Length: 494
Image (tube, rainbow, N blue to C red):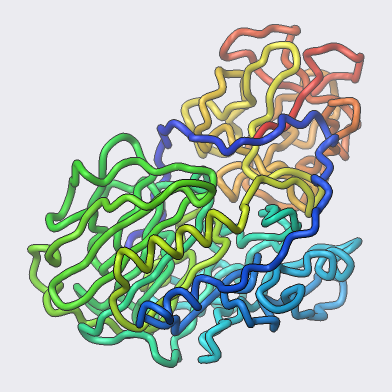
C-alpha cells in the first residue's frame, strides 16, 4: 500500500498469553525441555492437501518434517561477519544457542530469512521503491536479531521484530502466484505488536517495489490502520492488502464480521482464487480457526481479475511504504487455494508447536509492560503520543502499544519500535524527566534492569522513580538517587 507513515493512538484490549510476571532482570529463560520434533510440518500438511508450499519462512522452526537446513542468517556489528542459523535436526527448532554464541558481546541483525521450500524464495533487505528506506542507498533497515525472544516447544528461538523502517523482500521469485492464479498464505504474528502505519504485510507484491495499481498485490496485513478498511473494535485486524486498499471484506471500509484479533501469538490467513477470497484467523497457542470473510473479490474496479505479480514482502507495503510495526515468527505461501480442512490441520500443527513467551536475547523481554512495584500501574506514554520529549507517567495497565516496551541488546527500552526511554537532555541530576525520544544509541537511552527490581540509567546511575512516591494515574516518572523505595521497584510483565 502507498501511504506515508501515520502515527495513531492505539486503543485496544490485549489478550495476553499465559506468562509469569518477572521482576527486574529476574527474567531467566524457562529451562528447555526435550521435545520431539513434529513428524510433519505445515508444508507437509499443505502438500497432502494438494496445495504445496512455494515459500516457507521461519526463524523459529522447520516447516517440513524432513527439513534440517538453514532457517536464517545473522550479521554481527563487531566485524560484519555472518552466520547461518539452522534447525536442530530434521523438523526441529532454531539453534538459538548458535546465535547467542556468535552475537555475544555485540549486536546482530537478521540479514536473510531462508526459504525452506527449495525454490530459493529467500527474503533479504528490502530495496528502495515508491518509498526509500532509512538505511544506506534507500534500503530498509534489518531487524535486531534478539528483539523478539520466544520459546517453541521448550526451545529458545527468536522472531523477526519489525520496527518502522524495517523490511524484507524478494522481487525475483520462483513459483509464486501471478495474475489471477490461486494461492494461500498464513503467518504467525505477535498480536500485541502493531501500529497504524502502512503496512505490516506478508505475502504477494509487485516485482518493482512500486504501486502498480489495484489487484497487483495479495498479502496478509496486520495492524489497526483505518484509512481503507477495518473491522469491529479498535484493532488490530487481519485484512488483505490488495494494493490501493486494505480489505476486510467485499466492500471498501467496514466489515462487521472482521473482529479485533490480538492473541499474543496470532495465526493470520489470507487466500484467493478467481473472484473468491477469504480471511481466517485464530489463537496460535490453542483452539481452531475462525472465518472472518469468505466471498467475492472487492466490488471495486481492478480486483477481478487480480493482477498479482509474485514478489514476496515482509513488514512493508508493496511500494516499500515502511511506517509499520509487527513481529513475525513463521509463514508460508502455497500454490493453489487451500481448503479449510487443510488450514485447520495446519492450525493444529501450529498450536502443538508450543509457542510461549520468553525472555532472553538482548537481556530482556519483548513487548512487556513495566509495572510499578508500589503502584501496580504501568509506565505509559501519555495519550499514546509519539512526540519527542513526551514525559512518561504511571497509568492503569491496559495493554496498549504505548505501554509495551522491549529491552534490546543495546540496553534500550523501546516503545512503538522506534522510540526509546530517554533521560531528558542527558540529565544526571535528581528530578531529570524520563521521556521518549527517537532511538539514537546514546548512553542516556541505555538502562540496566537490575536483579533487585530497579532500573538504572547507564549514564547517570540514577534509578527510574515514580515522582514523590505517588501512585495515582498521571504520576510523572523521573530519575532519582537509588534509595530502596518501592516507588523505584519495577517488573516486566508479558
